[in-house]
Amino acid sequence: MIRVLFVCLGNICRSPMAEAVFRHMVAESGLADQIEVDSAGLGGWHTGDRPHRGTLGLLKANAIPHDYLRARQINTGDFTAFTYIVCMDNENLDGLKRLAPQAGNISMLLDYAREQEEREVEDPYYTGRFEHVYQLVELGCKGLLEKICRDHGIIRKKEQQM
Ligand code: 4NP
Image (cartoon, rainbow, N blue to C red; front, side):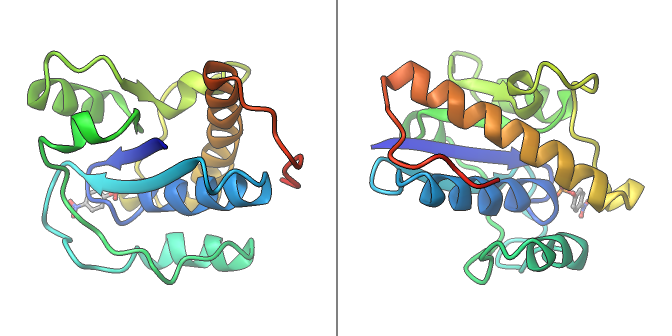
């Protein structure tokens, strides 16, 4: 099983959005039996909470299932349990490297969207730009799924519709 963990600061805005979007893409591509998806926050302030209403609004508007999402904090076991740990910005990257200096499986979501000028997914908790963040998340997730399929020699049964 290939396991993907999305990480942001609070696990209520960006990483649960990426989890839901990516899980939906994986399912639409017929790969749910090969790729598992989760998300976590570097901070634990929102543990057990549903996503921010801005994230929920975008997921609803795009018909992406989201009822299962609950925030949790990352733990050291995650660095070995997950194949890919994908964070949102440079601050997340620094935080993850402090927790696991040896980990070789950490990347940023927009590493997989090179055609996109922005390199970090900004925090909509502060900027309020949830719609813009959703577009970046979609682009990054598409590129990430292509990368995973290349890395693991996976031929997609169905092309995703997104
Ligand atoms: P996120 O946004 O990292 O995209 O979930 C944040 C949510 C909550 C907080 C910070 C960022 N907070 O400080 O509570």
